[in-house]
Length: 312
Image 1 (cartoon, rainbow, N blue to C red):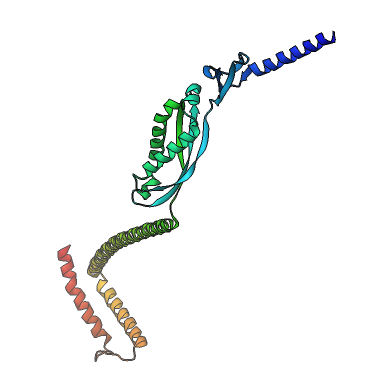
Image 2: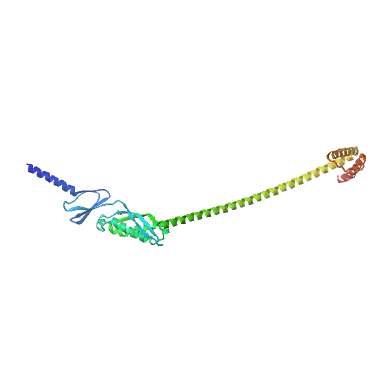
């Protein structure tokens, strides 16, 4: 009885071990390559699988997700014979597990080495100044070169990215000096353009100011001339009207007597003002003869009166 129980237990353990060894669970986005007696048998996709005990074994395990790994830094020589240190990143994906298992020993190492050789070739065809500008072109050339070779490995190269391009310190200093000179040149050009535009603006402003001032001065003189003309005309009209009125009044009864009285009053009044404002006087010899002065003025009025009548 005990021997039978022991045999059953041993058999159960054996069956469990066999199941553990032969049952395979493949994760999502993974593939396993199974060999039977050392030869390729089949590729297992995601899910639960049972292998033939002692005959089948999982030889290779591949993840179908996108992989990324560094390309070590390497020394490259540009077209203008400048040594630079370049490193990068490569992105690839296993698309055929069978080819990846039997097409090449280590697809990661092969991709890295091919990327380095292709990169050296690309850098050697361009000048140092263009290596920073042509990154996209370099990346595309590396991807194209690796992808053609990787088709036989069951690998798809998705992209390649240059991380850093490091020139020697002497070249870096020369480039920094060149950039500094270029910035100073652009700043000087900008300042000169600003000064030029400022000078043009000032000249234009002064020109406009001179034009406006001359126009204003012209208009002022025109206005003054028109005002003076109007003033002269008004004075002339007032004088003419005054003379006409005097002439008419002189012909009326009592007019000569009133004129005599007015002339005498004006004479005495103006002579008195003259004596107040000046220490030196030039006076006629017959100052006391007021009647003679009035007679002279009235004679002039009598000569004017007939002319006024004729004009009327």
